[in-house]
Length: 136
Image (cartoon, rainbow, N blue to C red; front, side):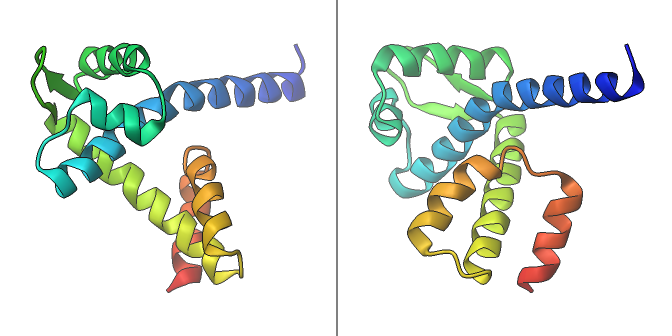
């Protein structure tokens, strides 16, 4: 394998790993937002938020629990662990930086909201720092 093809394959591996983490980041961010609005978070709240079935919520909630990002008991509220809160804050901050950057360069609020949902998961720390400086 050449250096160039090794670099490309590592980029794809990195993207695949980011894609696996997107759902976790989205869920902890949603749990944080809903808990601030409602005080507690139920599976039905997440199903409504994401527009998915209870089965999908249950599957992803199990992943959150396995990664020690959330805690839940049957028919109880969902809570973020310390690690989950930390990840939620990081995801929220990245989202806000990307969103505000897009607004600053002239993207409509509607499109900035939509686009920032995807970009936030794939943007490098270097790019985030530059975006942050640009919006100040």
